Amino acid sequence: MTQETEIGLGKSGRLCYSLDDVAIVPSRRTRDPGDVSTAWQVDAYEFDIPVIGAPMDSVMSPATVIELGRLGGLGVLDLEGLWTRYDDPEPLLAEIAKAPQEQATARMQELYKAPIRADLITKRLHEIRDAGVTVAGSLTPQRTQEFYSTVLEAGVDLFVIRGTAVSAEHVSRSHEPLNLKKFIYELDVPVIVGGAATYQAALHLMRTGAAGVLVGIGGGAVSTMRTTIGMHAPMATAIADVAAARRDYMDESGGRYVHVIADGGTGVSGNFVKAFALGADAVMLSAPLARASEAPGQGELWGAEAHHAELPRGRRFHVGTAGDMRQILFGPSHQADGTVNFIGALRRAMASTGYLDVKEFQRCGVVVTPYESL
Image (cartoon, rainbow, N blue to C red):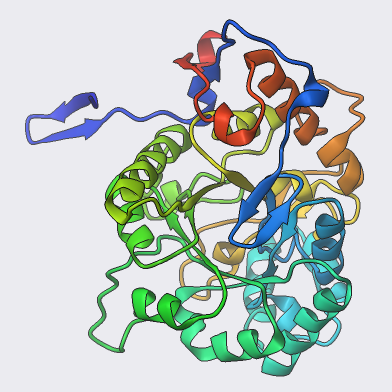
């Protein structure tokens, strides 16, 4: 049962919770951290850790995609980023990272005006393929029809369609929109699609045949969507709602399982852990991986919303550097601020609550504990 709050005589709103508002609670059983499994699988692709690197230029380069793959996760390259617009984007990434705050957005808008090149999409994906890790690339719905054949010909293993709010029923008067159901049906590779933040939106995306649904709208560190267009979906409630859609879709489809992937609001390891307890199968990380010493953003974080030509809905955000990627994921940690050893935190939480694997951990008990009262 949901709780409605009266905003005024003519409008009520549902009470929702962020990840900071909830906490996990132990059960009657505990385990040894070494006995738990953090493995995750989508379609035929198996991963040691349930971590996906967010397709953002400041987080994932071909080199960091490869490094994350070797560490057991899945890196996703933004196929609309600087890596597919310029032969050598590294000086430009450094320029964005070092630009004065008041100039950063305008400079990004200039740099991202350069056209996307199909030959560079192929080159970058081949580079990842040659390293022997799972190959995944991301396009927005607007660019998918234009470049998906290039992506498939380059040999991608997993395809991600990621946007601010992706629906199965986009309507346009000016052009023929992407038919997600037809598109996914005709592809040979699993498709992960999102973001979604409600039960109904997620259920419709699951009915398109998607292998996974990204959960999150306006909840990341770089997002200013709540300020610019008034849109925000608290992540704890969004994950739980989409997990409920997954459960009901399994019944509807005769057992087909669609993975729920939290995307946003998991900048510290405690929120990362809580995402799984609320129903996520994996988490797409941005800020934590942007803090890695190898990250192309050099301690700065920005996404596609930050350089939109007409209405930026994000910003460049300073996250600093906390260690190399291995240390971010596996430790050791030398500070108790939740920025390092994400997998160690997940293992410890699973062991402390008595669960052996991630799917079991989705049953973990949670309580509402507003952050201000802690």
